[in-house]
Length: 224
Length: 255
Image (cartoon, rainbow over all chains, first blue to last red; front, side):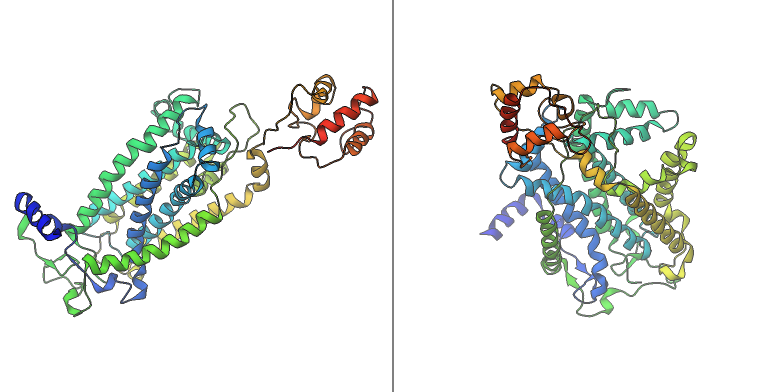
C-alpha cells in the first residue's frame, strides 16, 4: 500500500533523488558511538537540533495562551504556569530548553573547533554556524522579556542600554528594539514578541537549512 | 581552475583528492562492515541517544519548575537586575573599571565584537591543513584561554550576586482576600497601623500582617508593647476596637 502511494507520487514528482539526498547515505565509523564510545562528541550537533525542534513545538503551544501586552503578559504566563493542564511542563521545557540549546551548541562548537572541522572546504559552514549561535543568543535575549516579570524588565533595560552604546547607530538600534528612545514598555514587549516568534525563527530556519545542505554536500569531516 | 562537477573527493570526508596531500584521511570504506546506512539504522541509534537525553531533560523540568517573579514594576528603582546565566560573563565584564563608565563601549561593544568576529574568522586565520588540536597549539591555546575567561567571569558574577536578596526582591506577593465591610477592616483603615503595615496588610516598614499564625491575644500584646523595630504604645484607639481588629488580623490568610 505504502509502496503504491510512493510509486504514484514518484511517477509524477520524481522524489527518489530528494529521498536519496536526505536519507540515503552511509555514516562513517568514526562518528558512530556504537563503534567508538568517544564518538559521542559527534552527537552534540544533532542534540542541538533536537532541542531546537522541542523549542519550536513548545513555543507554538505557549503562544496559544501567551498575550503580548503589558497588562496581560504576566497574568497569562501566571495562568499558564499554575492553572493550565501541563502548562507548567510545557513552559518548563521551553525554559530549560533555552539553556540546553546554548549548552549543546557550545559543546558542538568546541567539538568542531578542536577537531579542526572548520578547515577547507568547510569555512562557509563554520560561518553559518557562528551566525546560528548569534541568532540563538538573540532568541534567548528576546525571550527573556516575554514573561514580563521583574527580572525580565530590568535585564532587558540593561541589554537595551548596551545596544544603545554602539557607536554612531546605538540610538537607532535602541529605538528599533524598544520602540521608543526613553520608555521600555508596551511597544518593547510587542517588538520583542515579534522578533522572538517571527523574525529570528525565520532567520534560524534559513540558516539551519544552509547548515544541513552544506553538511550533506560536503560530508562529515574525516577521522583525525 | 577546477569547477563544478569535475571535483573528486576522498571518501565521505570529501577532502579534495590531489595525491600530494599528506594528511589524507582514510576512506571510510577501509573500515569494512563498520559504516552504516543513515536511514534507518544510524537514525535509530541517534534516537536512542536522544531518548536518554530527553529523559534527563524532563527530569530537570519536573524537578525545577521554571521561575516567574512578580509582575514587572518599572517604578521599583531598588531592583538589582541579572541577565540569564549565559550572558553573565558579559554582564560581569561591564563591572571592571577598564570596561565601564567612560570606557563602557570597550566592555559592551569592542571586546564582545572582537571575540565574535575572531570566532567567525577562525577558518581564515588557521589555514594549515593540520586538524589535530595538539599539532596546532595557537588556535587550541586561544580557545582554551577564551573558555577559561568565560568560565572565570561567569563564576565571579555568580559569586558576587546576592541570590538571597534576588529571591526576595522578585518574589510574588500573594494578595490576601478579606471582607472590606468588616468592622475590623474599618478600624484598621482609621488607625496608624496602616502607615507601616500597608493599606492591604502587605507590609512596608513593618512586616506583612497576613499569615501571622498568632492568636488575637498575642496580636494585642504586640500592639501595646511593640516588637523588634516596632515601638511600644503605638495603639491609640480603645481596647474594644483593638480586640475586634486583632481578631480580624488573626484570620488574614493568603490563598
